[in-house]
Amino acid sequence: MTVIGNSPLAYGLGDSAMSPNSRAALAADKAGAAQQDNNQAKAADQDQEKATAPEGVKVSLSEEGKQKAGDPVMFGVSSEEYGDIEESGLPGKTQSMLKNIRDLQRKMAQLRAELEKIRNDKDLDPEIAQIKIANVTAALSGLSAALVKANGALEKVMDQDNLRPDARRLAQQLASPPR
Image (tube, rainbow, N blue to C red; front, side):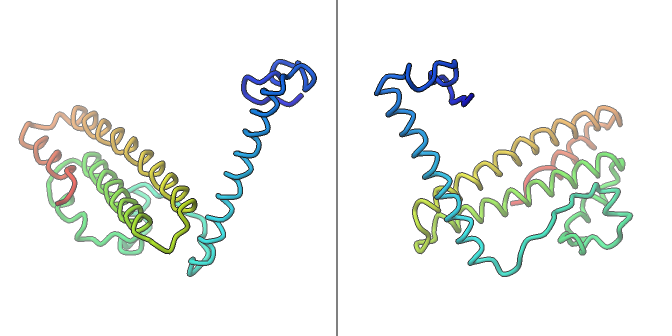
């Protein structure tokens, strides 16, 4: 049985029980879904044309994994980027959380720049631009939620480590976005 939202098909009534208006609404929904699929395909095709190299599998490593793997420059992060965190004298777990927060902030900044680039691209088809904007905005939303969780986890780690007020202030300063 086909289930489509709250339509009569969802309740097993079939096409014959549907009013002409319901059938028209169902047809409009199907046409809208087909158009959305078409727009996403256009966006994907345009991305393929602009891509310089195919994108591979992305792997995320923990801070411990990155340290064991070796050079942080290999992961797109210069050692200076974490220097202030590493020299802070804060406990290891707190430093790890601060590095995670900084990574999230950096990714969010990259997505904001990408969003601005899409908005300023006058050659981009408006429909495709809308799709890309929606995708980047959704990614930003996800990263924002992850940042909120990471900040909460930082507070928890600082509580567990019984950090003094001055050390807490330092950690909060290091967790603040760079200006």
